[in-house]
Each structure stands twice: as C-alpha cells, then as structure tokens.
Amino acid sequence: MTQGKAQPAYATLAGDLRRRISSGEYPPGGMIPSESALMEMYGVARGTVRQALAELEREGLVVSQMGRGRRVQGQAAPDARPATRYEDVAAQLRAAVMSGEFPPDVRLPGEPVLAERFGTARITVRKALELLQQEGLIVVIPSKGRFVATGPPPPDTDREG
Image 1: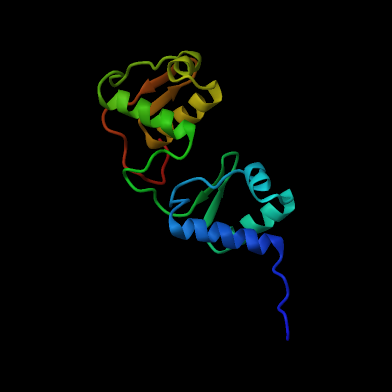
Image 2: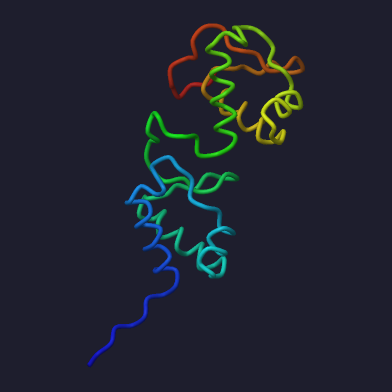
C-alpha cells in the first residue's frame, strides 16, 4: 500500500484559513488574525504562518495592509461590523458628523479628547481620523487642526485635493 507524503504545515494552515474564508468565518473585508495569534492558535512557527499567508496572498484571497495586518479580499457587506477598533471609531465619528454633532467647518476635538470619549488609544483615534481624511469627510489644516469638510465628501477619484 502506497502512502502519500504528509502535507507541509504551512499548506495545512493555508487550507484551514482558506476553508474559514470560504465559509464566511473570515468574511470579505474582515481581518485575518495576526501572525502571533495564528502561531498560538495552530502551535506553529512564525515562518510557517508567513508561508501560509503568502500562499493566500498569491491566490488573491487576502491582501496585506502595511502596519494593519491582512484583510480578506473583497468588499465588506454594508451591514458588516467594522473589522478593527479604528474602523469602529471612524464609523462613530462619521455618524457624529452626519448627525450634525460636528457640523461643516467645525474643528474636531484633539486626539486625547477623542481617545477618552471612545475609551481607546490615541493611535487608534489617529488611524480613524486618517481614514475619514482619506474619505474626504475631514480636512487637516496644518498648525490649526482637523476640521469637518464643507459640503459632501468628494467622489472617489485619483486626484488629491
């Protein structure tokens, strides 16, 4: 009787992550657990985790985001919960702007004040503000602060303004 070769650990891990993605456990737009978390969950070395994730990236299933981690490829469902804490803070700030709590041209509170309001770290608030700036909802005026943009955010274009 001929036995097949055992699958390398990274291939086994990649297969399990692939299954979790296809089942929706890790939905489109959602974050994959960190390398450290995967190392602990599967009892494998960092190199094994990196090989598995690299395979999923080559397949186009996940996308690496510098300094943020890896996200499942695809658009999150409109009613999906934010994948990260900074996205949750951004969603709450976006709602505050849309409700008129922070009207157009008004200076937003500083990072320490917002961090206290949301019970999170300043870096989380900074990432949330950067996201809203990318969306065109807020603008940064050097030496003055962050302000709610006048009028609706500009449409997604490749030009900067």
